[in-house]
Image (cartoon, helix red, strand yellow):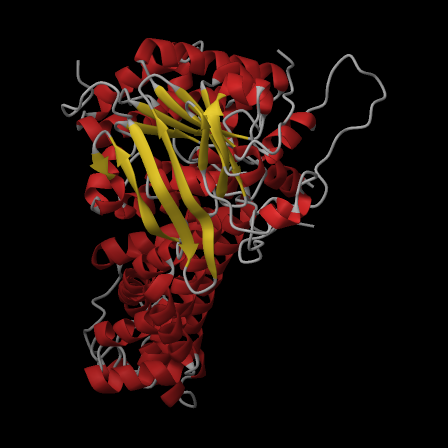
Length: 339
Length: 289
C-alpha cells in the first residue's frame, strides 16, 4: 500500500523538521528547531502555554504566517512535497484541498457578509472548479454530515444567525469540503461552552474515523489531549520540550515542564486544595535564557546542567525530551496518573 | 424617537440599510432628489421647454414668465432648459471624479491594508504628499498640464480624491484583516485578489459608501469651482458652475440669474451629504445620541 504519491507505508503524512521561525531584525527564534510528524489517521496535539509558538508552528504549515514573520530554517514535508519550497499557487492548491484548517473563534472565522452555504461551496468551487449550484448541493450534504439540522434553510443563513457551536460545525464542514488528508485545528473548542466542546470533539472523532483524517490539534487543554489525541508535542518558549505518545505523557512525563503542566490541572474530588501553578511566566522571544529555556521556572533546576543549552534527546522508544537531567537519568519525574 | 429605534434595531444587511434609508424623511427626500437629477440627466432633451443653446439676442435677461420659467441669460437662452442640460454634467462629473479616485485608491488601499509592506509604504508617502497640497491648487496644477475641459478637470479632482479614499479603504481593511475569516479565506486557498474583492470589500462597503456619497458632493463643488474659473466645462455646454460665472459677470443687469444655478448646486450637494450621513447612521458607524 502507498500513501499519496507513491511513498512506502510508514512515511509520515506531515513531517516538520528543524523548523525555525524568526521576525527578521527583531526577534530571532520565535520558534526554534521544531521537529515532529503526523501520520495518516493519527491525531497529534501541539500543547503549551500561550505565546510558546504552537499557533505559529501550525500556521507555518500552510504558509499563513503574519507579514514580516519568516521561516529561516527547516523543512515542512506534506505528502512528500516540501511546502516551504512551494510557489504561492501550489500552496493555494494545498490549502483547503488536502489540508483543511479550523480556527479558534468560530464567530470571526466566518465572513459575515456571505451565506453559510456560499462559504462552504466556495471551497469546492475553488478546488474542484464546481459550478455554484453543484457546489451548493454538496454544501448541503456537508452541513448534514456535520450534524446541522435543516440544512436547506441553514444554507441561506448568515453566520450571525447561528450559535457558536453551529458556526464551528460550519467551519469544520468547510474544512472537510474537499476531503482533506490532514486537518489542522487551532484550539477548535476553546471558545465554546463545555457541553458544545464535547459535541465538537465527538464530531471531529467521527470524521477522523470515516475520512481517515490525520489531525494536528493545537490546544492548551490537557483534557482534550487525553480524550482525542495519540501523540503529543509539548512546546515551551519556541522549543519542543517533550515529544511522545499521550499515554507516555500522562504516565511518564520526561520533562519538568510537562509534569508541571500536568500538576496544574485542577483535580476533581479534592475540595479546598490550592491550585498548582507554575511560577513566573513564559519569557518573551528575544529574552530567552541561554541554557534550558524553562530553567528559571523549573523546580528541578541544577545550575551545572541547566544553564547550558539542552539538546533534544531520545530517552525511550519514540519518547524525546529536551531536559538534560532527565536524559541522563539524574531526574525521575512523577506522572499525573500513577500506573 | 422613531429614528433612534430604527438605527439601533437595523441590521447591517444591504436590504435593511436601504429600507431604513427610505423610511427616514430626510434621506428619502435626498434620494428622491438625486433620482430626479438622474432622470433629468438622461431624459433632459425630452422634458426641457426650449433648446438650451438657441440664442435669442432680442430677449436677453428676460424675467420669469410662463414661456421662460426661470428667465433668459445674457444670450437670451432659456435658463430652465440650461439648468436641465447641466444636470447631466452635475451627475457625470462627480461620477468621473469619484470613479478615478476609486480606481486609484481602492485597489491600493485594499492591498496595503491586507499585505502592508512596500505597497503600503510607498502609497502612504505618496498620499501624504498629495494631501499636503491644497486641493484646488493641486487640481489647477493638474489641469494646467492636461489642458482645460470637463474630463481633464474631473481627472484632476479624482487624483486629488485618491489619497483620501486610499486612507479610508486602507484603514477599514486593516481592521477587517484582523478578523480570522480573512485567515480562513486564505486557509481554503483563496488568492489575494479573491480575498480582497470577495471577502474584504463587502465588509468595508459601509464606510466606503459613506465616503463616496460625500465625495460626490465635494466633486460637484470642485467641478463648479473649476468651471467658474473657466478650466472645466467649455462653452457652449452648460454647467451650474459656468452658469454661475456668467450670472456673476452680469449681476448688475440681472441680479436674479445667480439664483437658479446656485440653488440647484446647494440642493444637490445637500442631497449627497444627507445620503452619506444617513448611510453612516443606518449602518451604525456613528451612534445617534
